[in-house]
Amino acid sequence: MQSITIRRAVAQDAERLTSLIQQSGAYRGRYASIVSGYRLTPEYVMRHRVFAAVDTTGRTVGFYSLVLDPPELDLAFVADDAQGLGVGRLLIGHMIGQAAEAGLAGVRVVSHPPAERFYRRMGAERVGTVAPIPPKVSWERPELRFTVPREAPAAPAAP
Image 1 (tube, helix red, strand yellow):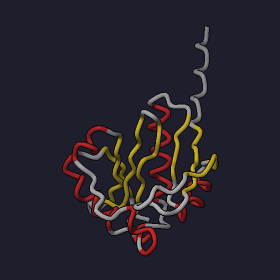
Image 2 (image 1 turned 120 degrees about the vertical axis):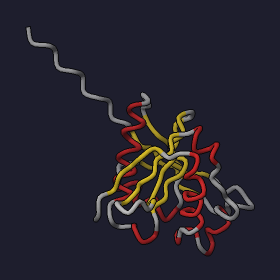
Image 3 (image 1 turned 180 degrees about the vertical axis):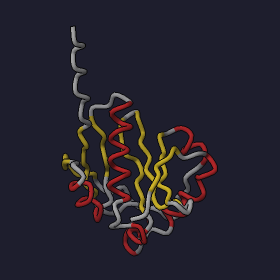
């Protein structure tokens, strides 16, 4: 895998991030309705902790959005051709670091059903199921939770 940098997204990234969502193969067929017409706005990017994974050519290959109140991984996408290369693992690790920095004890994820296995491999635990919300979402979704590790206490200073 080539080198990936994770950086804070800026308002100008909104269209590029929206394109990642719209082009996701995971949301074809029966799942297409949930992203149909969905747009990530510049205001959303500025209001939440949105981070982009960028490769050495400057191409955005993934992103996530962490909402702090209430704590939730609201969005997480990796470009189809970058899946399986460790980008998602980097993004989730970064998200956990951001959550720890913000003092959060845990982060909720309402998962796209096919992504549940990925989140569980990353350490999330299933805590429930979210009911369908017709007409956009006609299926149940797994509800998961990442527990955010507490920093180890600092070692006492030597006398």
